[in-house]
Each structure stands twice: as structure tokens, then as C-alpha cells.
Length: 265
Image (cartoon, rainbow, N blue to C red):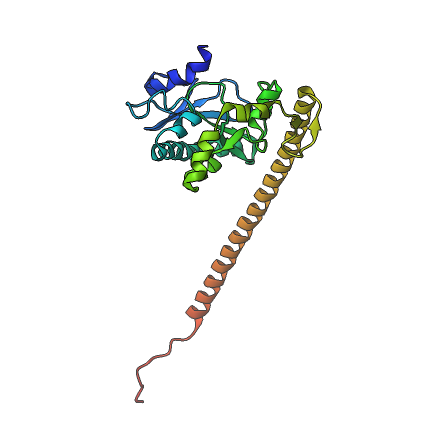
């Protein structure tokens, strides 16, 4: 039970009290932590901090409880999570470039029926390659097209929809709507190929990642080669321009000087 409420414990604490093995960064409104059981090469959680009576443990228990409360406050919380996610994505992309030489997609979203207490936004790289990815529930909870993983851009669009749509959505936002999705068949999110079990799927996902990595590195290599050629041509053009300027100056220096004063002799 303690593990299921650990995020709420973190959200109540001062960021300075959390060890660097847990806390990645923080803002005035949110904490960004390393996922203890990452399901992708990069996987972080962003959770709103519990601060004062308006943002308490009760209304921040989940996305569902947040949406059931004040609509404008809910929008502010989700927007703040989205803003912090952009900064985290940028740092992930920088690390991708440094470690692998290329960038690939990053997903940001909520689980329709989360297993842990306290609202949290997942920010993870689009590969789902991890030794912590062990069960069908794990995989289907992050499949980007299945419906259990709610992309934050879609959630933000709910607030700008017709009031009746938003009201009905909140009423229907129940675990019973999302939990059956976790039992659906296994299908590759890359190519939609159906898989008979998790070991087969994991091998397939690794093969897909290997292809993605190979293409990414080749593309980055071609890009660097093009940039190097452009830089070389630019330097050559500058050198040619410099030599032309010197020749022009030399020619001017050698021309006879013409006096503008009329000689009366």
C-alpha cells in the first residue's frame, strides 16, 4: 500500500528534501521525478505539488478527481503540467542527441485508470524498450493509440470544448471505462502487427528500436556531412572573396593618380 501512495508523499515534501536519485527537477507548482520502473529508455513523472487547501491531496488524487472539481483550477493544473513537460522534453531531446546522435518522439500523457494515488503526468520516449516492461497491462497502459494513455494535448482540448461535452466526459470518466483496455490483445504500436505474448512483443519492439536507431544515426551522419560541406564551401567562398578584394585593391594602387587641379602651363 505504501508504494501506491508514495507519489502523494513526494508531493507533500519540500523538493530540497528529496534525494537526487528521485528528484530530477522542480518548479513552483510541480515536481519532476525519475520513474522508478521506467517503461522506456527515458521515463519521467511530473506531479503537482500539494500546496494549501485549494490544491490538496483529495482533489489531486487523480485526473478524474481533478476534473470533478473546479474546471478553471483543473485547467490551470493541467496547463502547468504541460508547460513543465515541454522543458523536460527539451532536456530529453538534448540527451538523445548526445547519447544516440538523433532524436525520436516523446509522449506525454495520463493513465485513464492509474494504479498509483496522486495525479501524475508521464513523459517517456516513444520506444517502450525496457526490462521493466513485463506484462500486457504495462504495455497496453502506454500504447499511444489504444485509449488508456490520454495524451495531454487531448486532455487540454477538453476544457475548450462545449460545456455539455465536458460535463458528460467527466461523468463518464470512470475506471470501468478504461480498465478493459488493458486486457486487449497485444499489437505493435509501430506497425500494428499482432503479437501472441509479451516475450514475442519485446523481441519485436527491440527489432523496431534497432531499425529506428540505425535510421536515426544514418540520417544524423548525413546531416553532419551536409553541414560540413556547407561550412567548407562557405570558408572557400570567404577566401575567394578575400583574394578578389586584395586584387582589386592592388589594381587601384597601381593606377596613375589623376589631379583635379587644372594645369595652366
